[in-house]
Length: 424
Ligand SMILES: *Cc1c(COP(=O)(O)O)cnc(C)c1O
Image (cartoon, rainbow, N blue to C red; front, side, top):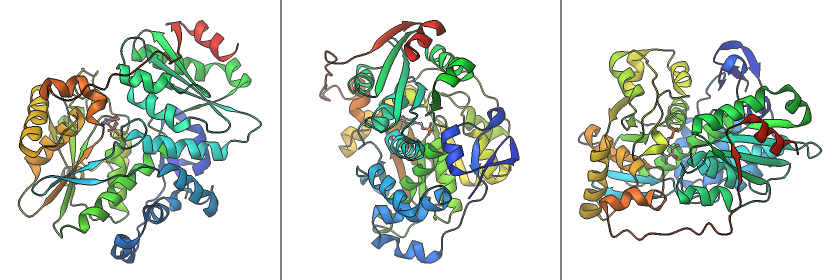
């Protein structure tokens, strides 16, 4: 399997190149040049297969030219180390809990898979330095995914005072090969510093740089497993057609769902659950894609005004607006509805939603019809967004974090200081 560049489909790369390089030329995104379709027999046997067996069948075609089978098995064993349970919430409505990984958000799976792949591709003589700018969730997942991975050093830049204590703890408590750098600026400033480093010729001669942002195919593709694991669990419970609601920001998770469906997974349709950042929702309605700047909401990991995977979705549907409307429905939910839903579901169903899952569930309830069964993705643990969940459920225990043993480096918003840290 080769990978093409969405900006120039004649430019081809191997899985290894796509993972190590991250972004294709001219800011294009890598995409598999074709999506293999799995045999019908796989789906009939899937209920008896282990998670590792399912993952091998689904993901190996995308990596096999760059990784030996036995190495791929050990990558999967290191990746799939936490459960992904399907939990009943209301009649015909289930939550797929994606938050049982080390940083309690769904990004853990993709970050771990990418870290183990990158380490496999790195020769130990020259270390790779992974640079990542984060507003919170990505940084913590990457920190834990890359922790103690041979041959990889990580520098995480986050905006001072703008991440939650919980997220800060997850980024600063590990140390070792993980360096947390607090920047006196905004998330955009952090991103600019990282981009400057990538463009710095001198720095690129001194060290091998790589990025771990969500556009990397090694973070995108393993997310297909959520849909396969969901299907395996729901098929034991019902024969109804399945609808899946995905709380969306950059649309990596939903894009993985569309690829899973192209491989033959029988999902009837998807729901793109948006908060007030409704760029995609408006695109579905009007056919016009008008990216804008983001606004802050309670479900802040979805505060994205220009979703980076939009281009991949266009590619998968050949830009056919009708086809997209057919397979993906969407809604935009505000903060008041989100809090109301957290409160109600707690009282009525005795289930605690996080703000992102709450947006997903509201959208599912709006869309689901009779004789269908719905699944919404619970993308973060409610405790991770405890300050918001407690506005709806005041009795939720407050798990305070202890930052006293944590270590971070503080820099101003300026490239020279960042450079000096990287090249002492
Ligand atoms: C990143 C994130 C999302 C959005 O996922 P995308 O793949 O960017 O659409 C949703 N919920 C949580 C908790 C996240 O961390």
